[in-house]
Length: 435
Image (cartoon, rainbow, N blue to C red; front, side):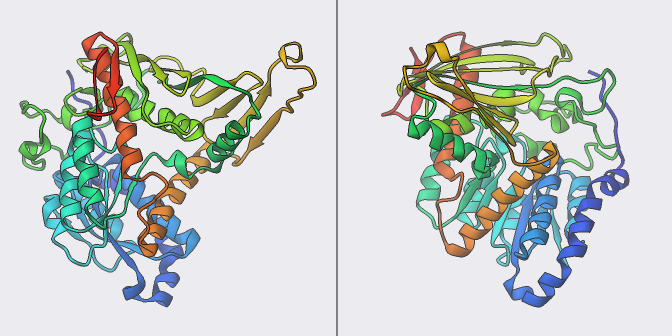
């Protein structure tokens, strides 16, 4: 595969740090008033695409809420991102240390909590290390790569005082709780079918298409700790494509299952009050992006829940006529949440409704632009973590057990695809097996 080359470190820094600089300028006075001792000091493990975004959103949360936070440590095994993270943090913090390994960051006793935004297959080890070090954790979704890893993290977290938030941020969006209340009240009738989807399409020649993110020009064997990258994955020859485009490969990611599907499935679980399905079958293939990837670009899963409903999920990287959302289909009406800022309640036709029953249509939009709603949801999710740390409250909006089930569903669905069979959830073993 031909590697795509992209921005230099300086160019990337110029693009990503501008918003952080804006946040820094607006938050300076709040920090000065409260004083350094009242500022929550954090560390960031993994300053890449998502890590840089989460640092920026944390700064923006601080600007809005006047809840002072600063990053005093950034760890990354790629020298370029480590330096960029340190520079971005120091637009708010007086001083930020750069670490070439997450364990060195965890030794910093001034760091209260860490945001983990590394490749999926690294999450479990870094979370376990952070728990052992007594740090609170914001873990980007999916929480872990496999069911067994999730069980290990849950056990360690339950035996600690660590407060954990997992980054499925729809659990900090009011619309999904309103939908849950509608279902609970019986307003849409009996629910027997749900649907989730996330579709993407890309202009020919567009940058960062279909997980093929740009590769920094200063990325090479001298600036990347390639050996450290693998963790439990089988070692492979040095490849910047694998390093920066890891979602394409099953060794490091559950692909659509863990990058996209986990969001909609978790949202439906919230609305329906469920956790794990009783069975899953999946199908997928690489139809569009025949570039050496091992994770499919087209995907469908059917999940059966013992609560009495079926959930169909689908995703494609070749058409985005519908972008992403969920449907909750009841006998009286359907709830549709488009992306995560518009909700419609659509009544069934009058001729099928019971005598005397009337369902009023509802349309609610909470934000004008999708980008604002997405950023706002992430900021609220980070703020919830912040508040729970101050209150010493372990029940965050997406706690460790909820995060475990979200990633377990992704792992189970992908395993069903790989094994070409139906898999069922074994409650006693807390794992899946063949039907």
